[in-house]
Length: 158
Length: 394
Image 1 (cartoon, rainbow over the protein chains, first blue to last red):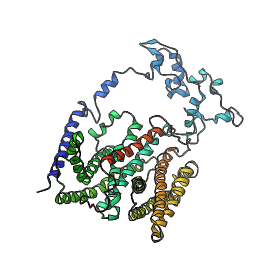
Image 2: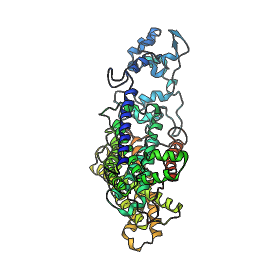
Image 3: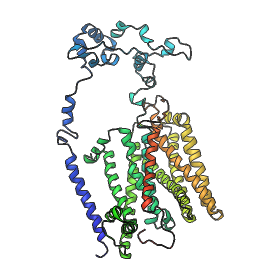
Image 4: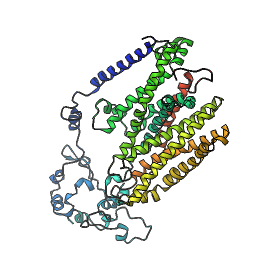
């Protein structure tokens, strides 16, 4: 066919692009991809090499067994230590105490579970914080309002 | 940090994860699909009065297509991982299907534009010297055949590509609506109407953009604005805007009329939380006013002067561009400010100015297509040559 030279050339170019894409794909896919599922298997190995940030559920009990036992008997037994305290790696490094453990004392943390909410199970302890504190309308809730009365003993074994 | 959490059941309710960038993404792909439909009206359906905008709409479609994924890259971060979804596509994933459709559509648009502009590319190569000559000769793939026979072949292929492009553009944008429509936990999104609404509003925004671009470009070039072209665009715009708004209203009306439990949260959402952007901007300012303005252009065609028609169409198209953006905003942001448990609302979302997902980034992304068009126009004209030079390839 006459006058179709440019059509053949662009078709050839598109074919080259396609071959390039298939070849490129072959080289771009990581070696371990698909070894154990639809992901790069080596990613697991890389993750395993990282320093853990959080501790296992029982890590704290190694040193603080009294608190752990009390908590295990209390209503907060299903709440992990690191929910209210900082992560284990900020406190322990190489099996030794590294720094003091920070505690989140904000009333907002308590409110996360205990703010009155229609959708929560009725058995859950729930309060309207402003009402509970008998605050005047518009008054701000003090930052550590809950801990002023509910102390540590109270929380670990209520 | 837990301020929002205090009135919500689910922790995924108190962050607006899908930010301004996710508003921008369907907006841009909509412009891509809509602009392509305009050029197909000329190439496939023989609306010869649209010839002045046929090239412009193709190049506009390509320019926006080039930045269509940028909001996603800005939103997700890690642009180096962007290709993973393309090289290892999972065939049950709608998002990986997008990679394939995007790739096919990109090639299709580039080849069609190449065929449309082949004659100009060859002429440019022959006129130029040095690197420019070498460059455009390479773009022409070394073939300098601009005989009538070769242009006739080009024309036939352009018609086929433009026809294939219609389903491709529809799927490209229908997919975006599908992504929202398939989120079944979200009462405001979860409807099979969503892809259809997105598609029609995409065509609306595409036509509106071409009206605005055509009028501005022609004024800048001090050329005569083709009255019948603007008239035709205004008529199509009126049709698609009407269909879009009808569908948008149908979705809300059917939710409201059925009084399902979703309405308990969607009703207050529309009435209180997004009243300004939904009822005010999307429905009254964005839909009613252009409906009346374009209605004047459609119904009072005989009494309008060219200037009046141009002015009315320009205003209506500009408002419709805002309407479609408001629609994207209301769907994306509106769908995230209520709790999936139906328990309440979080505070409204205000985008940051700077930052990766801020207003500045949005403006930057939207500016790039216009720079691409400007660069393109420097070598290859976006508006066709003056009357008398009939181009077989168009």
